[in-house]
Amino acid sequence: MENKFQAKSDLVRFKDAFSGHIHPHLRGPNIQKWIQISSGVLVLSVVLVCVFTLVTLPRDSKSSVGKRKAVHTDPNFSQSILFRKLQSSTIKPVIQEMSLDDIFISVKTSKKFHESRMKVILKTWFQLAKPNTYFFTDFSDEETSISTNGHLIVTSCPSDHSRQALSCKMQAEFDMFLKSDKSWFCHFDDDQYVNVLALEDKLRTFDSNEDWYLGKPSIEKPLEIIDRDSPELQKKISFWFATGGAGFCLSKSLTEKMRYHAAEGKFSSVADKMRLPDDVTMGYVVELLAGVPMTKVEEFHSHLEPLRLVNNLANQISFSYSSYGNEKNVIEINGFSESEDPTRFQSIHCHLYPYFSWCPSSER
Image 1 (tube, rainbow, N blue to C red):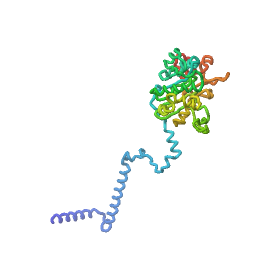
Image 2: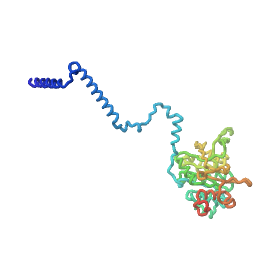
Image 3: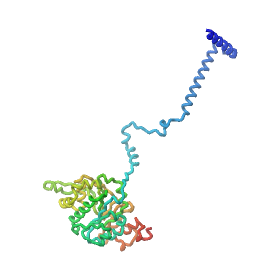
Image 4: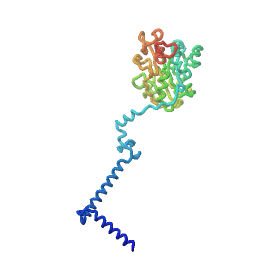
């Protein structure tokens, strides 16, 4: 009780002392108005301080505008033309882990071309791919065998240029590849220069564990032939084929799928039955029997196209040559004279790989 009276007396004394310092016009009813105004100013000050503090605080990294991702609620946005163009411009081909050693390169030749055609091949691009390049012929030639590093494969095929002879050698090439541990089977003719490094770079963009038939057709539309399995030969079938004169490549996965239709003599049997040459038979087996479409690769070149129009040689895979009377269809390139280099293969080789000792010093 005494404490209560003591507190009350203290409050009275405080009030009297405070009243003594207040201006006369603030006394009475005016004091209440002054207190209300002062309280309002105080509350407003506190609010302003809080707002200022919130504004100047560092933002959390999760709320940072710079790190936010745009979320599109419209499901059709990802299908818009602009979005797909932007997306495609950032997509790069997947580069496979492989080397030249993963490629089985086969070259079809014949006895009469061992000296003329093979000699320039052995001097030029073969030097860059000795371990994995094989030549399939119809005649045993010790000198050529030594020059090919023992990679001259003598078949029992005829020595002429008939479709039976061509298919017979293709059969030998295909069967030998199936027995290898290589990832790619690439076929070329003996009148072709193969830019093996460009070939390797191109194959790096394809997965050998998938089905790939890579080549270049020499016709403008699919070949249409009579289906010899149809009743009374009434049905027609059509398919693309990669011309052998430009070269073509098959992935390991595809060749395994073809095994049932083409291995161990079956390829030759199909060629005889359909009455087709080797490269056309390959297209028939791949596209119609194995069900894999041909993928066109522009960097393959044959003598069936105007070779003078081919440029950017470093990126091209194969080149050829031919002559019709006095007119020659060859790659136009400076280098050796026409008499020294009628195929232009030596000039092409020195243009691509000038460090070879026999290349002109001007190319180095």
